[in-house]
Length: 405
Ligand code: PLP
Image 1 (tube, helix red, strand yellow):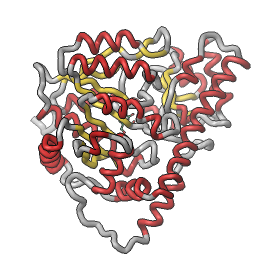
Image 2 (cartoon, helix red, strand yellow; image 1 turned 90 degrees about the vertical axis):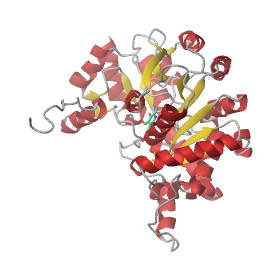
Image 3 (tube, rainbow, N blue to C red; image 1 turned 60 degrees about the horizontal axis):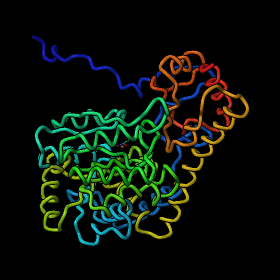
Image 4 (tube, rainbow, N blue to C red; image 1 turned 90 degrees about the horizontal axis):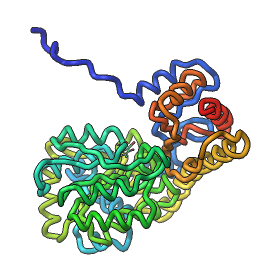
């Protein structure tokens, strides 16, 4: 038989397929709401001014070369990244219980975290990860790749276009002890629905009660609310409460460094001595997978995090992105509710957070937007707020109004 004859054809990634269809469309008012990357008010990618500045500094640094980084990454980057997510008062950091490893952005952090758990977690029976229903589609594949079975816990309630809090808590209470739950730290993808502070409190309580493990995925710190500390509050609260956990961190969105693949995995251990052993094993895994992480993006972020002036500039840039998105939510809400009097409740447009919004549109309505209005979104009714701007918002609102009437 011919080599590779037995390889079945895989379906194309739905988001990339959508982008290709958008590109091929010649309609002048077309809008791409599928893309998971920030766009400015003219639908263009945005290089953060602070990143431009940091790039300039690196370019003129005579001390830099192209040698390998250490296996666990650039130390100035990983230590500052840990402080960014855990906060300056973190007990785990003060007592040296955090192992931080530089990864290939958030995807790599998820993968390394999953691989580490697969090998070393004290599994109570089968290897299983509890994922929110729905979640970032890649979570399913990442855990399957390392032999961990993804199972779903209730999260999104289509009736309220909000959180199914009771379903979520029941799942935490009925899962076997020491189960692993993946939690989106903020700006849940794809729904834009986050638990409130009080709800996080109850979630932490239920996790502690059953001895579960929290696998935090944090892809949007700062990008969600415009405030780095606010978006880290669930993670910090869990650490304070002593919930056993790890954190996957990405700088793709909040630093606009998508293609540079800057991220980190932070594993918190109960004691420093345990942490040393965790670090040794993460190094072994990292060595066999990528040997050493890439240097350029980590150098950029390290400069920004470790220089007080650049750090302040970064915070301003983050606010620029987050506030533009929040402004689009508010304007969309106003046009739908006050001007067009679109049937239905649209509170979720302003209550949801981050780049993505579950509009509540069903499959047929989503398809109608693509086919009739040249507005590209996935069939689940998810839109990327970053695709909206002052030029196309009205056309979008009017088209949305038409498909729900
Ligand atoms: N986790 C979630 C929930 C995401 O939405 C994303 C990006 O869309 C990622 C992780 C990882 O992205 P990256 O690998 O580009 O950092």
